[in-house]
Length: 468
Image (cartoon, rainbow, N blue to C red; front, side, top):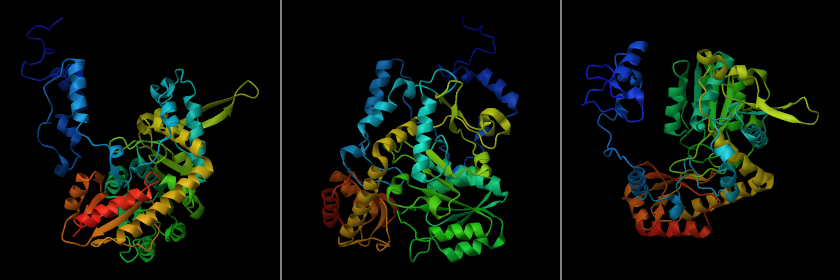
């Protein structure tokens, strides 16, 4: 029934009202604003920096009032994209092109996994067990005892791990060491404020690795909650300083937090083996497709230290015996840690998790096994080394820190007159996606097990024609 003309629930004819969201009705919206004491919706966005505000209407079409028209519109938009799988792509930098076995999609596409929401108390057909299996496999890969149900992405996992360290130590400063992705750094800063101060310790320009003396100097005040470093770092460099950073952190009373690429752990030592108290990262390389930028889900690993386990804000699943001999169940461990139980008093808010990606990663790890992970790691290392050597022979191309070990990602510098953007535009015309532009004359390239020697040679040959 349409409200009377003078009813406060009747929207003004010139005010757009969303057809599916009742709270968009102006009177209801105003009542909600009044209830929370906000002058307007803008109050909720006050923390968003002005520099990234849109400040213009979204470029949206007129309402599409039929499913057929909506499907047609979306197909037209999607057709404008060129997937990395249909070209020769050397993009990486956090979202990696790895082979995804067909069985991973088969399992994650099953209705009991695909449609269940976070494994709530309704019938979930083994979702809790699947997550427990994923956690167990990840714990073996990371050489730790405890792994969380995945959070949204590796950026959040890093922020959460650092907040955990802050709660354990009761200290304020966080040292971020070496070369870290600027977007990740931005997320960490935003996630840990206002409780913690982020202090950057830049990489040593001579080596590309962490400057241990600078870290030692930054630790002198004794008020550092955690030292954070990455293995490999943003530029793919495997930093030999990592074990020493753990000793420095522990010597000053700080925890050591290491972000890592999990697919590298078939050939590289897990961070826990050289002193990491918390290991974090993104499981995207473990059987999750690139999917318009990922396919992301964050993990945090730790040993069975009650101090650390108590500070996990995320769900943890464990195996428990039942009343029937020989049978076991799977459920939450220390549920009262989470915001589900503590609500507004929770240490961090925990909402929808990326649990489905965790199940996919669990399937991937169970398929690959230790030998498969080793073979992938060795292949990526070999391809990375060959790509560095081959591109360094191209006139006008240099590979910084070429003597260091890189895994998947590696930097490239163009020494000629042409910019990275122009070079990459020419590569696209040849059906090749170059790396991620990091400066006017630099880019971050990536190779994995899906690339071949011929692929790398094709890239080098194209650059020999383009770079001047």
